[in-house]
Length: 360
Image (cartoon, rainbow, N blue to C red; front, side, top):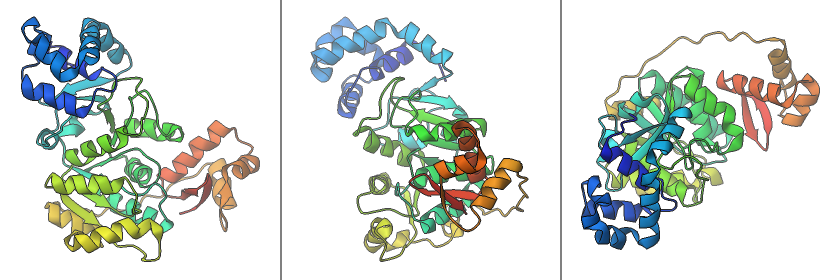
């Protein structure tokens, strides 16, 4: 990681070009496989033809500034792995539209570990949350690295389940690594890093989460993984894109059936109609198909402090809004957010939507 070879500098410079399409990145690599040719005057017309005059000019400008760009990333503890590097994920390299660079913060060794993707609806039911949490715990305990997209809903539940057991997880961003989206996941961002995980992106620092970035991100989630697990998804869920990409990439697909009357399960149930072989009802179903042995562990007792106990007692028989918990505990918003995150990580409470909380 963080190699500063001529090839690495050129590749990183190209990926710094704003809104350069995946197609153009693939095309330049196809036409001129050696990156050093991209800055060779002999191939200037070819580069301009592939990238266009505007993007070619911006690329050369970024290349002239590449040393300072790399130094800035290092100051922010953000590394880079190009497709030339041995740390580049081998399964991702096999896909036809692999990213030229992955920007990484955290544990880079996870990129070459055995991964499983966990994706789904952004508005999971309690059923979906519990299924996601239980399966993800088992995946982590079995030694798999859980990959997800850091979005609200199933993605966040999956990442939190890993952090609960101090297990590493990979969050794939649809923005630059200095842009935490959604903003309410800032605590989760820090927890992922402190538990030995990694956050990665193909987008340079400062990049905002544009709409088309999300389906582009999905190909990385599936590309990193041996299989994709969906606990719950609506018909319009972006996770269905990830599922279909997994099939195109020759990956395993694992889908849990849901309530036929629930909109949050319409997408997963439809997938099972089309691909009944994807049906799983236990985590062991997934692990056995991947050739991974399940592991059982004893549950540890979690000790609560006074304020955490107060929160749990307040949620004993009802859901409460964040603002109500602020009034009950007399904590600051930041202090309460930290405690709620810890209680969620330990599986004691859960966020039920609309900033409401209940006991798990």
